[in-house]
Amino acid sequence: MTPAADSQKLYQSNQYTAQSACGHCAGVIRHEPWCITRNRAVAYAWESVLDAGKLSVEDRLILHALGVAWIQFS
Image (cartoon, rainbow, N blue to C red; front, side, top):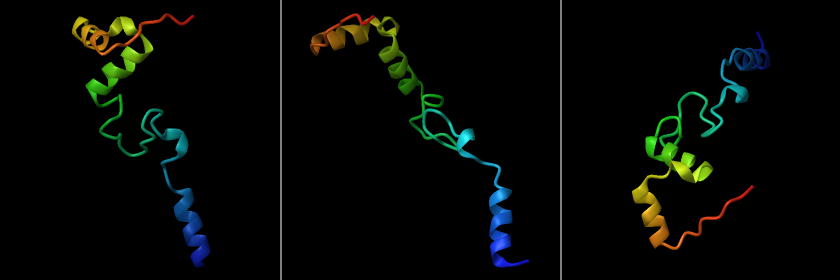
C-alpha cells in the first residue's frame, strides 16, 4: 500500500468527528474541567445567567451589593 493510501485509511477509521464533540466545551474524547456537564459551579452559574430565579438568596444579596441591576427582558 502506498503512504498516501495508508494515511487515508487511518483518517477514515477515525471514530471521533466534529459532530460528536460536546456542545459546551468542544471536547471530543473527554470534557474540559470547566465544562458545565462536569463542573457543578459552572453549571450553577450558567443556569443563573439563563434564569435569575435560580440564584440562591445569598448570591442575590451579593450581586445586589455589587450594584447589579435586575431588568426583565421579554
